Length: 248
Image (cartoon, rainbow, N blue to C red; front, side, top):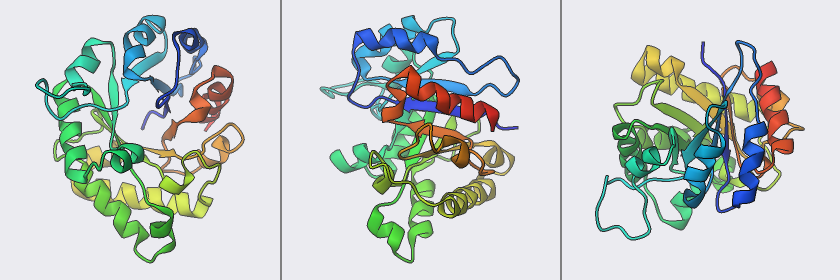
């Protein structure tokens, strides 16, 4: 049985004062308690890890370099994230792909760097609005999945996050039919490539997830949780999403 996951991506937001809120988040005491990961900006990682020590919340990074060290001003190595207290790292977010022209091959290399540092790679994929409206949408998403996911991916070291680019931060969400169709396709592709471990890899949905729509989204069989942006910045917004996941 796949354990559900509520992951929060703070993006370029957050202050030290906001970290106390993390300690109030809980997945509940049941056997269905979701895993919770918050990914703050890199300067807050160590403080966030300290604020959540011995609690249910884990800390993740928002990106990592493909190399373990070197002359890469402004970048952060996966090993540095691990040393700061992270257990996971997001790679291939659409904002990184757009702002920094990251390719599937680069995302794959970053995921491999995460594995080498004993971090879980949360690999992001998703289509533009133009691609969603076209006839090849699922093929485009499948190609991203294949190109961005290393051969060494397992259910323990990899989470796939499907985020339609046009839904991120817009308040717009795909229909349930579109979400189900896409997640079912991703599950089929992962199982065909990786066998049993592909069947156990978690697939998150992301893109304008909020307390009012989370429960409906989590009804889909192959939606194993969510990668949440703005609604993860406050515990009062993120906790209802976690609760909906625990009840799904």
